[in-house]
Amino acid sequence: MVRSVNPHSGFAIRSAVSADTEAVQRCVEAAYRHYIARMGKPPGPMLDDHAAVIQQHNAFVAEYDHDIVGVLILIQTQSRILLDNVAIHPEHQGKGVGRHLLEFAESQALRHGFNNLELYTHECMTENIAMYKRMGYVATARRTERGYDRVYMQKALAHGNAPP
Image 1 (tube, rainbow, N blue to C red):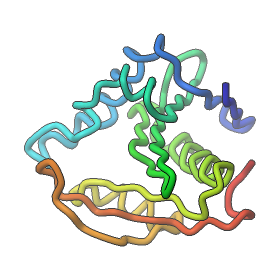
Image 2 (cartoon, one colour):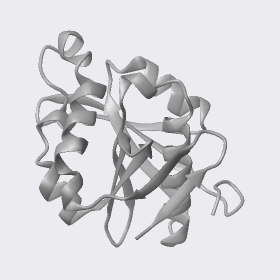
Image 3 (cartoon, helix red, strand yellow):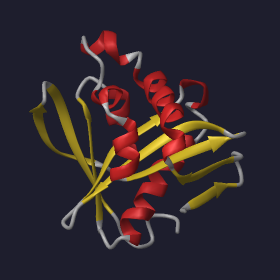
Image 4 (cartoon, helix red, strand yellow):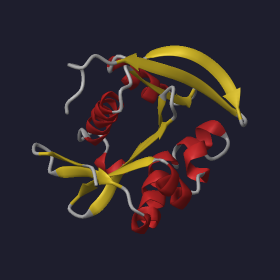
C-alpha cells in the first residue's frame, strides 16, 4: 500500500481500498456539486462507478483524522499516465490537500517512468484551469467528449520536480 504523510498539515495519502467506496463517492459529490448549476448537468466524476474505479485504476485518498477529505485517480497505460480525477471535500479546500495530491500524482508518474502527467478538466472549471497553470501545466487540446467540453493539459516532469 502506498502511503505519504504531510507533516505540516496532518493529512496522509494512501491507496484506496474497496471499503473506501462510499466515502470516496461522498467526497467526490461534495467536491463537484457546485458545478452542476454552472454546467447544467453533473460533472463526469460524479457519475463514475467508484467501486470499479478503485479496483481498476491507481486510486488514492487523502485522510485527515480518519476521514477521507480528498481523492486522486490515476489511469496508466503503456504510453501515458492520466490524472483522471482530483477531488477535495469543500471543508478542506484551501488547506494544501489538492496541491499535495497533485505533487503526489507527479511523483507517481515519475516513479512509473513517465516524464509528463496529463489531465483534463471541464472548460467551465476556470479556477481549476488557473490553478493547474500556476503549477506548470499547459493546455494541449480542447475536445468535446461524452457531452463534456474538456481542456486537456500536460506538465513536463523532471526528476527534481516532484517529491519522492
